[in-house]
Image (cartoon, rainbow, N blue to C red; front, side, top):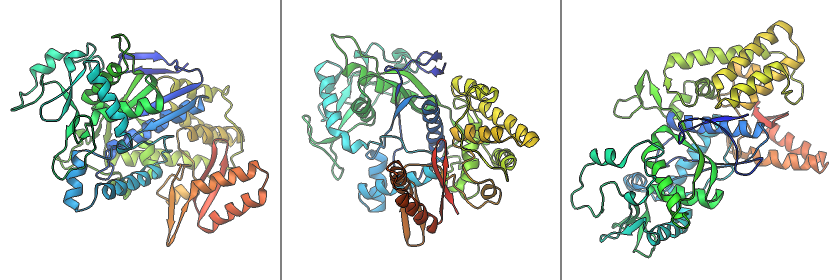
Length: 472
């Protein structure tokens, strides 16, 4: 029985999906104006782990993670670089995909961009105005009236009185209340804009997630995730927008059943920030550490706990992961499904079902490694490899990892690309075509695709969890 810590309820709760056997999950993604940093890496890996476990548990998962491709920082950076917004955002979307693939993060099922859903945002804003939850201001902006929504503060536990006490009074503000937030920003010279009933402008940040989640998952869905820093005001504002817009007869429609937030990333016990000079991009870290070591390091801590980054902790993670790979070295892994009645598998499942307790699940992996060292049992070897695979670990050949041949996990990340001189292959498209050929019993075509990949330096490995690849 899976239990999830629900930020909204402030307790672990039994997970019961809206539709039996199906899970709808939305996670706030990246604002693409720069390279992804360690905080982004944690969000990527944590909710990749969550979706993997839900699927391993038999659920049909629809995982949506958005991309914010329009906001003040993006506009400013594009102007500084003398490039178009589309050029800037696509460049950093590509970089994000490369980084996440190296970390073994499977692509979400749906990755909507904010600029593709302006129409849906306008529809939601109009509904909020009509129902009395929002108002157009004299300057062309549209604001959400926080005081009109009775449930405001229920996610963060903040009261309006406390929030107002700490709010600065804005000079020449067009807001009715200092706590009101913008839904639609009037166009400024030189900025991109869209037509709207309130004049040309662009959407505020919060409204995009409300519109995109409703479009892809419906007015109510199972899980909404993101970093702890988004709990307030972003997620609080999402609730206010969505539940008010979808209200019926004055009664709000609950937006999300389970809210999940991963903890902050700290660097040598200090909060990571550019001002402190301890701000690391994923790419900078991967110049020094193997990508699977970084993934292992992230999952070794419980997702809700602070994650303290330091060279010492990464070195420790490398030593620990090396122990697991060393146990498997030179041993054949049989192609078998996980026996969930096996005592070790039972312990693993109990840990993961307890709010995705990856530290305890990893403890099971190390116990299995000790068993492998003692017995060399094929069943135990297979169990270690396959349970680790559920976490996106131990997918490579032991010798490759131990000899440091690759800095990427090479998991079956949809859309992952490998560049070899002038040749760029979409590996996963070819893997999909090979699987389709095998299903159609066209084994000649399946072998041809395997050979094509092998010639490009890609070795395929068929496992019970699917086909993975690694560099030759």
